[in-house]
Image (cartoon, rainbow, N blue to C red; front, side, top):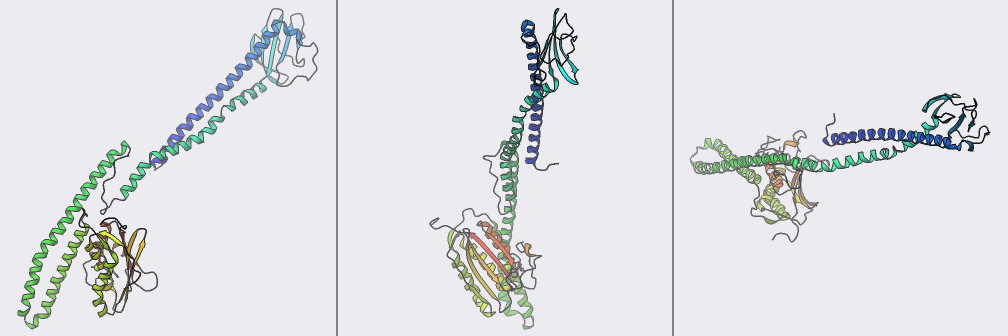
Length: 442
Ligand SMILES: Nc1ncnc2c1ncn2[C@@H]1O[C@H](COP(=O)(O)OP(=O)(O)O)[C@@H](O)[C@H]1O
Ligand SMILES: [Mg+2]
C-alpha cells in the first residue's frame, strides 16, 4: 500500500498508460503481421494469374539446380497430358498437383509451404512459398511497429511524474504553511492561487485558526485583567504593612519581615504575569521605535553592576555591534534584562558573565554566557514553559524565559538556550531580532 498521494497517482497513471501501450503494441503487431501475410498472398495470386495468361513459356525448360534463392517463390505449371511438370522454377520440388483451387499448406521435401493452386481444364498452375520465409518477413515488419511504443513508454512515465509533481506542489506548500502554525504565528492560510479542490480545507483551517486566535487572546486578556486587578489590593497591602512596622513587637519583627517579603514576591509575580500577557499580545502597530540594541545592553549591565560588584561577579560586555531593531523599547529592555538577571541570579559569587553581540543573517543577537551550574539536559527543552523552574533553591517565578520567548516571537526573532560546551559549566543563551535596515522608518 503506497501512502503518498503523489506516488499513488504516478503509479496508477503510469500503469494505465503502460497497459494501453501494451494493448496498442500487441494489436498493431498482429495487424501488421496479418497485413503482410495478405500482401504476400496477393503477390502469389498475381503471379499465378500471369502464368495463366500465357507467360509459362517464358520459364526455361531446364533450370539449373540450386539457382533459386530460398526466399523466392516457386512456380510450377502442369499440362493435362503429362505427369511431369511442364515448367518449374525448381524441378526438385514436387508440389501436390491435385491440391484444390486456392491456398493450402503442405509439407514438401520436409518443409512447410504455402501453395496457391489455380486449376484449369488444360493446365494446373501452382505458386509456392516457404512458410518460414513468410513468417520471417511478417515478424520483421511487425516488430518495427513496436519501436515507437518502446521509446515512448518511459517518456510517458517521466511526463506523468512531472505533471503529478507539479499538480501537488500547491499541496506541499500548503503543508509547510500549516506546519508553521503555532500560538505565536496564527496567520490565516492564503487562498489565492490555490486549486479549487483545496478551498474547503483551507477555509476550515482558517476558521480553526481564527477560533484559536480568539481563545488565545481571551486567555491573555484574562491574565492581563486578573494581574491588573490583583495589583491594586496588593499595593494597598504593602502600604498597610509599611505603616504597621512600627507597631510590631520586636519579638515578632522576624516573622513580620517574612510576611513583607511574601507580599513583595507576590508583587513581582504579578508584574511578571502582566509582562507576559503584554508580550503575548499582538503588536497592532503599537508605539514602535528605532531601538539601539547596544545601548539597551549597556543600560541593562549598568543596572546589575552594583549587585554584581557586591557578589564579586565579573560582568562585561565585549564585541558590541551597532544595530537597530524596530520595536517597543521597553520590550527589548525586558528581554535582555531577564537574561542578564538569570545569569546574575544563578551564577555563584565570583563567577563570570560575558555579553556579546553578533550580526547573523540580518539578525542582531545578544548572547549571555555565564559560569553558573548550567541546566540539566533532560529539562532543557522545558525552560521556556510558563512557571517551569529547574532550580527551586533560588527564588523566581518561572516566567522570565517565557517572557523572553514571547518578546522574541513578537518581533519575528528567536531565542536559544544551551549548556556551554567550551569547558566551564554554565549556559549560553542568545536572543535575536531582525535588524531594522538603515533609512527605513523614522
Ligand atoms: N543562567 C542560568 N543558569 C542556570 N539555570 C538557569 C539560568 N537561567 C534560567 N535557568 C533555569 O531556568 C528556569 C526558568 O528560568 P526563568 O523562566 O527565568 O524563571 P525564574 O523565575 O525561575 O528565573 C529557572 O528556574 C532556572 O532553573
Ligand atoms: Mg528568570
